[in-house]
Image (cartoon, rainbow, N blue to C red; front, side):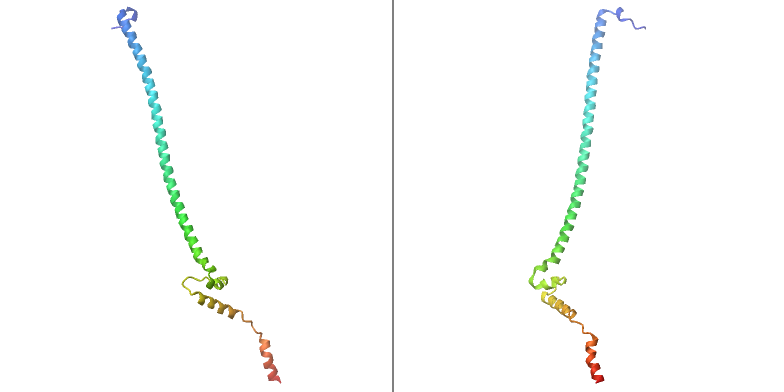
Length: 145
């Protein structure tokens, strides 16, 4: 059966078709608006997920950096403590001479003994050497004369 032309249809059917066409157009507009809203919402969700992922990554890297900085701080504190232990004795009266002479006196060493040891060492080093000519001259004069 061939579809008949709209002119040949009764007015009631033509009006009904026109109303349906208007409804279809309205529905198409609503569908387009809904699709547009859905796509915008989808993009917003994607952006939110990306932002959340970036935030998680930033938190993770910041935690790593913080751990690294803590480790560095502990190493610096250890070095500072070591330096303090090594150099703090230089202001104490019993160890002043030893520290000036370059002796590193630990807490286990008795300060007086360390100073005496250093003094005796430096005393033996500071004895002037007598030349052999001065010593042998009187002996030679004796043997000749």
